[in-house]
Image 1 (cartoon, rainbow, N blue to C red):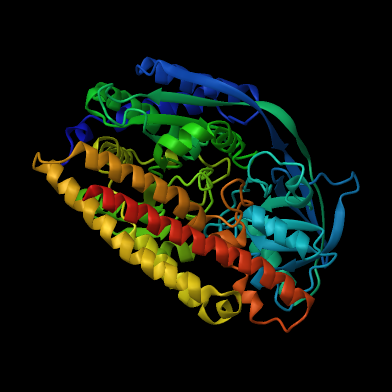
Image 2: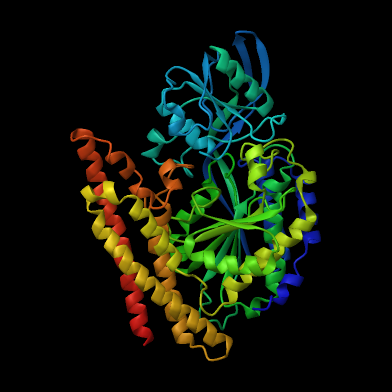
Length: 590
């Protein structure tokens, strides 16, 4: 397959111009602030200048946070004052602050509490994504901790003091999850250098600490910018589109990589694709989200909820661009829903001469569209495994979420590589007569996960779902073969538009069923908490099967079993409905 000419038109220099202008003229683009609104206006004006007349700013209410510094000191065995930041949506302490023994819980996952009693204590934990800050806070509260201290990632000598948010609720809370998923304890962030010293002190004996938070949490008007680019009016699928999104709010300072860079990429993609709009089969919709950093994805969640019909009927995929082209990476990493893996891997293999890594998408970043059933993907430069091990898994650089995230963290040569990749992804998705999705990888992951649960799953009837999974796998292989064959016919000028529209409709319906199954615990009409532990696994609704086998007969087992039987039914229905969609589509193709 030859590379599209559009790859030679995208320009890192133009992206650089936008980034430099944003970070110098609109620093600290906090959701709900004057600069947050200015950034939304900048995005609107840039997209209109690129010819996207249908560009609007939506203002919405969101619960956001304005954290400031925190006061933190070790009181025993010796007194030490430590620089700290209050984390977003932390509870506000009283003027007296909180005082307790600090205990080290490593990564802060459930397993890290084994043999430790956190009740009435302040926890010390790593600031990484295993689990995310929001989940660390939720787990700490469940374990009875009264506060959390999160040390930054990076090399042991990293003195950057981190920002971050700890609100588990995805988007704005509802009357129900406001009671169960909002933060429950005060939380602060500290540099890695002092965090490691605290860890060593705690190994030698009890360490007493005190801290006081400074934060304002509440509802504010915030703004997102949406720009639509329709395809050629003659296209049979002119209502369909690819969603391209990333957040435009930021923490204090320049926040060059996070996410001035991603916004500038969208502006450049819009400029170039607008020139070739007559060749597009599907359109592009660009989302500049807000309240990502301090509202836990309130902007993109609002957009998903308020544009449900259009997204469900017409959005074929979601490309997230967040923190592209930061310095120091030598590999490429993509995370995606499995049906997209074959599509983007082929492009990456063709265009890149470096190691390519893949993992299944989980609900992080602005992945607010899993419930809708829209497959998503994101790709960017990545550090080596050895580098990540040496930096406490600093996947986004030691400077991430700190005042050190400046223009000097951008690599402009890498930016040219990144923007070419994004253009190649989008060109294929917007012009391919047959959507390049493949469902055999989904079937393989589903079967593998159900096999892991074979023994504990017997008591809830999982064997029937396993049989449905194998039938789905056979059907997936058939529709993958049919889609690939029709795509080849189009390349030789013999493709059938009727067949393409039929296949694409079936592909979209399959994703609407399979993405929520792969990637949500709650299901279609809600959002899992940010970093929610079950959601990081395949088929999250079955996560608790691992606990079931360890429970003896009694109330707890019977209640959990009831829950898991219903989850099993959800899995079986999804697989059977998917198989039926495929069988119907293939029958119509004959």
